[in-house]
Length: 113
Length: 116
Image (cartoon, rainbow over all chains, first blue to last red; front, top):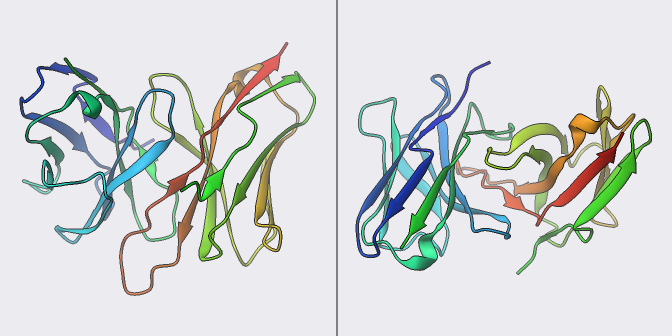
């Protein structure tokens, strides 16, 4: 069964540092997403990406966040200057078409200290 | 702004019985609904979905019912098995003509415990 792969599984970083979370979506999927889940809270939408550009972003996705699909296979989320409140599980997802269930990766646990 | 609500944080059911998980929504523009299952330290796993043009969708032991007038959906698991023990999230998306977003709005989840 095809999978969405995320690395690393756990990242600890100092406040103010930049982090890059990496994802390899399923190869024939066209739509890519990042979500996050703060401990004990619900899964929240961050950003969607289609045709090499952001199609929608949430209020959470401010100027400190950026996404990139640098080489046609990887899909990255960069947080420029991390804050304590960025600590969460970050999930990458992809879907083959609009209106279809996503496939989520297993997540990266980001801990900002 | 809780557009998707799961009012039961937890549910305990005996093995072999029916599990019924409930979800309510407020946004009448939602037209596609999904259920995901999540184990600790894993990503959500897609279970079953339903379009707003239907009122029922069945896949094996899982059936989702949609009541649009009540803005309510439910997931039935019959028979429940210990391996079904996990957090279940309801999610919804809105038709987005001309766009390519399809973002999901998640509920807060219900922890299902199936007792052997």
